[in-house]
Length: 567
Image 1 (cartoon, rainbow, N blue to C red):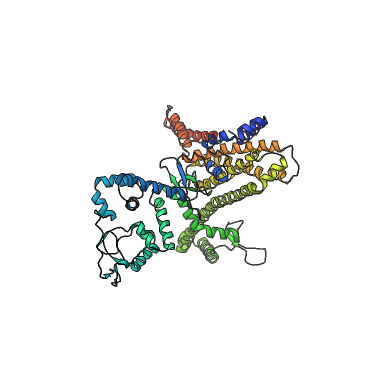
Image 2 (cartoon, one colour):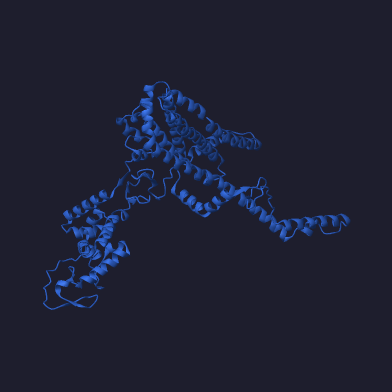
């Protein structure tokens, strides 16, 4: 399917009637949920919801949790354990933290061997009666000072310590990190767990806030199905249903990331490829950025040259000039002597030295390094350019929603709800820029010997990029005509039709690209196997004929891939 024909068909069908435009490109509130089920659907619930719906799939396999949601889930889990096991809420919270907030795991382990569970988590098997208050002073087990009974504090294990030592012990544990959640009795021979109620009654307000924070975060950090959003200063977490499809999720803060590796969303590239690409960028991107900013390649040898003086005339100095010049003189001398006396040693014996061999090897390695750097530069520049374009598109969308959409509504005498096709176009641009960015990382690691896959990939990528550039130009430049005007423009409906059509066709191209890459470009393999199988099944008259048949099969297979790509 040719990209130009597809573009004209999309624009032509979109311009048949204004009523069709409203139906196809501006869904009503009742249709918002249905459109969210499709790959780049949009709804009408604000920017964050739009970003979630444009992420390419349904949100049924993950949910975003706020701190309030997490506390409610913790309280619900504690209440379930208290009801089933008939223990106190403090003991239930200790059990849940030990078993990573899994109610089913707590119940299974408890009813299998209650005594072993109590011993493991530090819950006393029997609650002794109240300790008899002695009139004499009691010695603290930490500072070994004597205090009256009312100045001492003990848990059910009856190990008494003064209030000052208790506060210092808990304060130190809280400052050391989340290990305070599994705090035990200060007595070295006692493993009784320190309950949450005792911690809260002894610590300061600052330590109490930290402890509460640790308890809250433990629900996510100990849960293998939930992770915190990696965006800076974000307080949301994402709970994911394992096996529910792609790992790309969208937090309520608007940040898209991969739930599996917690890097930014990188669909359709797998996490291993992203890890390799990020590691390579960390090693080479700073050097590459400096080279790109401070040098230009020599027109002949392509080596980067830095302009560090005022004159505009530059001369690229060849490497190892002295060595090369010396070798040339030796060669000329040997040729002269060989012409005088044919009995002289051969030319190769005279001047093929270790230095020359080392120079040739160094030149070969230098050429390989240059080619590798040029290839990396090609993909890295396009990867970085699409990222900057995506960031600028996000900023343009925010400015559009904050300032320009109201002005456009007043100028064109249309309600804001009828202008959401503009927001949809910008959301499509943002998402497609991200997809396109990561396809360059995919292309960098695509083996060069897989020619069929590379050609097919470059064809799909080129069509998608062309459609995206047209959409981006229409949303960025064509819209300015209507933003700068003061009166209704009669061509605004034509602009609506054009922008909605470009949004639709761009969506289709990127669906095809993403689907092909997630399938590993398997369509190319299947076509090659089918072609080779059908060709090898034909009988041949001689070995020469067989060799010709095989050569023809290979050529035919490659030609077929090109035909499939072009059509």
